[in-house]
Image (cartoon, rainbow, N blue to C red; front, side, top):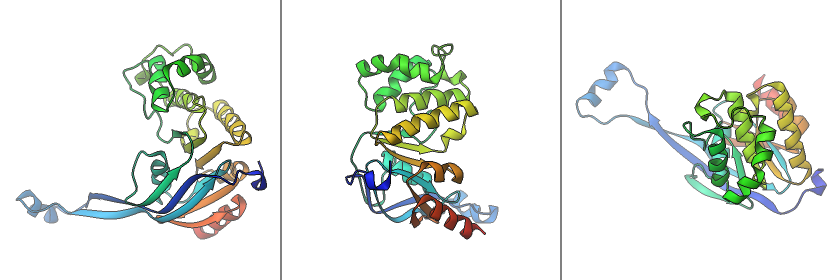
Length: 249
């Protein structure tokens, strides 16, 4: 889908979004002694994201790039509603399927079959809808031999297969993907990308975080470069990826 063909309606609107985290400050043994005897423990704050404003139109495929720790995954979690912004507002227009953390929403003691139903309901499907899609989900995941095994016995690749298959079969309008397609064998990765291309051509909105700039350039219609918690640049994939490469040099 070309940029001119994209729906002019927004799928996601972020206005001056910031996220503050607090963590225990690492200290020397000498610095720790007062805390052991009733002193206050040192806590440091840091902005994982700072003043991010971004509108993503329906039908866009957005690549998110940037160094480790720049705030990419935090951005996806805010969009998914997993975490809330400290400042600013986020508006979502459409049903989201997040593939942010491998197996998130899966219960390790439950079987693959039980987790399909659990995860499907978490992602907004009714039990009847999951039942109607169950065969399609397991066919795509290629896990019939293991579907009644507890997922705690699954490999990371098997987790990916099931998680991805459930997510794409919820018929989401917005799909969030954070690096997890790096898991699993090459054949299944290609299968996933082919399904994502179908989503793209059908006008779905996709947000894709990856360190693989080649796939970002080939797959995305626009790229957002996050650096040091700020949105540093957005534009055509080839131009933004080239800018990122130059800043690394």
